[in-house]
Length: 221
Image (tube, rainbow, N blue to C red; front, side):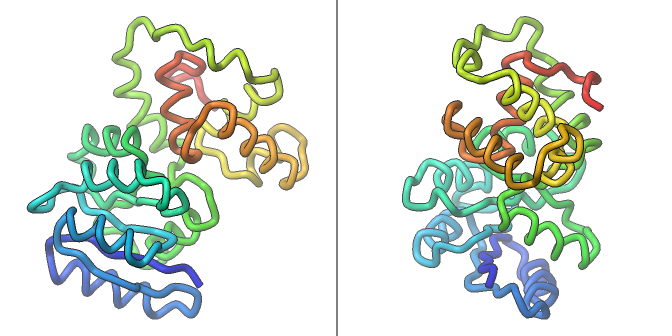
């Protein structure tokens, strides 16, 4: 069972999302929060698989709430998905840096919401290739001269290929097909890269790949 916390200051938004999610046999909404501070408390109390987090909330915004959840070692298995609109791209990039595993547009279709929750719960980043290019490419591309990244030297050539594929937004299955690996082997490689780079999850690998200059905006395929 995938356990979800809903964090949004609009009651109707929470009610709509709860209705969609609770209708699935494998998903349960275990708590709701109308501000970021309560979202953090709910995450600590419930230890959900996924927190759906709005950005603009009172008391504590979703960005800081995401940062606090990501920084709490007890919540390392809790995945945060940002609820946003496309006019908040700057906030989305900041949220990914803070530890979010991806994002969903607020007016998303029910099946996309449900699919997104399942994707993040199983450990994939919720970042389609086109979205990865648009969001992270645009903002990380502002770094004209990426700082030296000696930690990347710890990666093998294969692990670099894996990280580049992750940066393109590929799932383990897609990554396996691209690199001619079994899905299990692909997952193992991703886990090793995460460990070597001290990254929380795949979304963090995407950010690192751009900010270190390993990949450049517009060069992913």
